[in-house]
Length: 439
Ligand code: UDX
Image 1 (cartoon, rainbow, N blue to C red):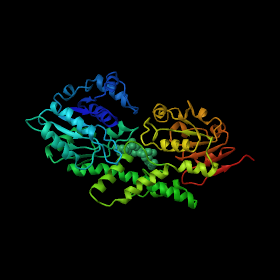
Image 2 (cartoon, helix red, strand yellow; image 1 turned 45 degrees about the vertical axis):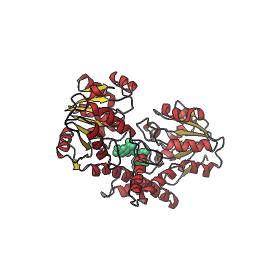
Image 3 (tube, rainbow, N blue to C red; image 1 turned 135 degrees about the vertical axis):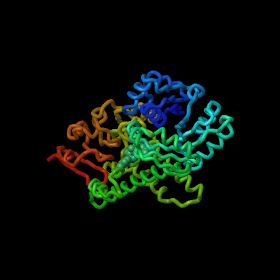
Image 4 (cartoon, protein in one colour; image 1 turned 30 degrees about the vertical axis):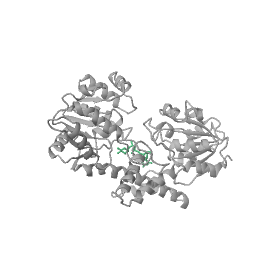
């Protein structure tokens, strides 16, 4: 099949590359000259395991092309996948301006009878609006059909999630268009849910809001465990074996971040408000998450009192491991609070430091290694569970600090690893603290 993908962000690029990998002829279009130049040189503009290898392979095998020109990219395209950003506006609603612009830019070059697939996460009813725009600005002979096909890929495992999805959701009022898109995905051998466009759009929001709620629920249980002296890890394990609950997304920490959960939860709140449907549970999910991001700072204040002039090492800027993405990362809330309290922050992340520099500028110090960050620190915050951080020999790591005080926001260490230290104060999430003093 000949496919054009508009937008080469995480979603568009992973989708385009994987569709080429399963045998389609794909042209990825982006208005950014800089991105297309990188891609034409076989380089990925984003850090995503396995992606660059597939870009080079599929370019060599002549199934993958990149261009800034809509005219070139859309030539003979049977399917046009739109995967541009739909960022959150200040009122919580999704901003559809990039999507509308992408449709308007592409419309003059669309072939008659082609199918427009909306992959971007969009509020319920958007696919119908896109159809309206295309009826007006699309090819005169026959306006393209519109299909909603939300993505569920995670950053850091985008290639794997695209090639081995749990399910594929296809929503359209046009049955013929839906079956062509179903056929496009046949090589993936995944369960397919075919429905109407509004339900497909809702599946995406409902899935992300459910997962976010699962995290806020387990974080609240974790806080309760800490208060009553129970252990959240054993509690999660005990709950997770129940197949109705499932073990995934039961890890208590310092809140969810990223480009999807915070944005999609806010958008669902905005949709519920627009239709006057009470949905306070999802608003609470959001509030719990905002509170959870402040947890480490509160714990540090409880232990150290004022944080003024205290040197705090922050390990991890990215919102989760295996990505350099810092959108809505708990590290941002934490570091801003530390700076407000007058602390001196020294941060380290294996890949996200350049992005951190764009956010914090010269307000913090950027260390080149964990050891450098820990030198003479009054306390350390473990914010992202990078392998490099989890594999630290804790006793050796804390030996660089002025005081061996560890606030672990991701429960990176086993009790055994902590107990092997000669001297440490270790404050995990949802579990009793471990305090070992030099005898
Ligand atoms: C998410 C969805 O998983 C994906 O389906 C959707 O398409 C986009 O949003 P992503 O944002 O890449 O993907 O990250 P994910 O791995 O799902 O983690 C989201 C956040 O939840 C991270 O901040 C992570 O630290 C947090 N999390 C996850 C927890 O706090 N506890 C958990 O048990 C799991």
